[in-house]
Amino acid sequence: MSEGARTSEGAWTSEEAPASDRGQASDRGQASDRTRLGLVVWGVLVSQVFLYPGLAETVAALSGRTDVLASTWFLVAEFGAFVAFAVLWGALSDAVGRRTPFVVVGALGGATSYVAVALAPDLGLGFGYVLAVRAVGGAFTIGAFSLAITMLMDLAGGHGRNMGAAGTAIGLGAALGAVVGGGLATIDPLAPLYTGAAVLVAAAALAATVTDRHAGGGLPVGSVLASVRRRPTLLVPYAFGYVDRLTAGFFALAGVAYFRDAFGVDPAIAGVTLALFFLPFAILQYPIGSLTDRTGRFLPVVAGSMLYGVAIVAVGLAPTYALAAALLVAVGVCGAFVSPATMALVTDVVPATERGAAMGGFNVFGSLGMLSGFLVGGLVTAWQGYLAAFLVAGGLEIAIATVASNAVRRLASERETVAA
Image (cartoon, rainbow, N blue to C red):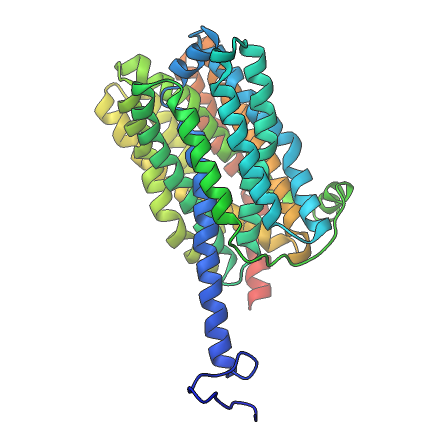
């Protein structure tokens, strides 16, 4: 059969289909995988955020303590493991040349840890056991989260678009998790743990269907630091990722506690309130991420961060629930400009063969940020009150935008020069 011939039924053979048809099939495959990977990222975030609106009740059911510091350590245990293991997962996937199996294992390990935590009261196990299992679960869950985002980076179609898909998944996962988690906590304080485990199992099953497009590389763990030394410009998006996640961690703990204490809302209303931030954050990320592929990263990163910080402080100053809730929408809009552009900067800096470790490094800084956000929210609130905590969180966002603006401008200019 000659090139370009059809079968008797009129269909092209897979080897002989025209290049345009093969390209269209490839594009459809990429789009399908982008959707499924987005759903995996979404599932990981949903499982985490289920816990936030009713965190005080969940921690009390597991430990008998209701103070903000108990909730702080409950979150810190998981995110400390995120920090320790994010780069290891990325480097391991680069070395083996596969990502999909590690995403599946990570999600299933996280699901198992959620169930183990929920069973602690029935087994008569104390809060120390809970914290230890949270740490083990965090070591698994970061693998699913970080490598699912890395698999998005492996896709064609524009870094801004792919990171916009990741950001949308993160935002929608957080928004739905906040609303549903608040409702679950009003029914049973342990229900968010069991439901989160079920979502992670579903995410693992979905991840197993995604085509592994790993670009190769074979980076050992030590070369992650070497990569940063060779490309110190990676520290720019890492720094923004750190502060951005710090604010997310702040709102997850101190922000929810603030709305519950200052305005007397229950877990269900706290979840809906938190969604006022996450919904615009989610909905706008994909279009803004795609837009930055054409218009550049500078304004979304720098101007967006400054406005983001101002809006955070304004929430803490708002005298009424209605005004504070409205300002949360503004916080979400500003955050949507920053997040996908910052993640896309990572892919602008490194070659395809180093994306796993580079994204692992980004998630290390991001997890450090979440960890810091929990600590800032919990400790500063305990020592100085909510307003001081809002001032610290918002002030850090403004500070990083001010200090790093010239570095972002250089990176954006270099990308535009290469693209031209």
